[in-house]
Amino acid sequence: NAGVTQTPKFQVLKTGQSMTLQCAQDMNHEYMSWYRQDPGMGLRLIHYSVGAGITDQGEVPNGYNVSRSTTEDFPLRLLSAAPSQTSVYFCASRQGVLNTEAFFGQGTRLTVV
Amino acid sequence: GNSVTQMEGPVTLSEEAFLTINCTYTATGYPSLFWYVQYPGEGLQLLLKATKADDKGSNKGFEATYRKETTSFHLEKGSVQVSDSAVYFCARYSGAGSYQLTFGKGTKLSVIP
Image (cartoon, rainbow over all chains, first blue to last red):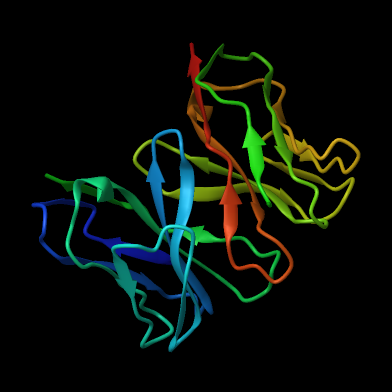
């Protein structure tokens, strides 16, 4: 089982560049989310989606964009990269019931110079 | 607001020592509670969960009991192994109908032979 797949695993960007972090899941999960992980901060929610065509902002959405055209894919776009976006990014998915476990991808380590 | 507070590390233990990692949550409703583990270079994976008061979650020798009276969900293991070295996160959903998992800041555990 592939589960949640994120690409790339590592990326270095220059300030001002744009890029898309890819996330795909093969479990037919309704909910998908993007988190960023920073030292001493835990994980913070960037954007989430409750189904194809529906997205919403999380705790730290500024500088990021998302879309959900299919159930499987939930890409995260950095519009104009800034050093403050240097972080490890995790995509997660889960079924639509509140108490269910979230499944995480292996992460993308992004450095903005 | 809805939050999770866990003891900050790092924690260093000798093999076969007893482990406790404290976690408390704000008492808004009766949230499901989770412990996630992140091994080096990997994404988060569910370690255990509890969905109501007095529930005990257990997995791989780890246990945590949902204590409503103390709003706590402390993680324990009687005898840690080197392979338990990882970062542990306590988490809850942010409220009824919420899609957001709120994480503690994480506790890094190192187990030495």
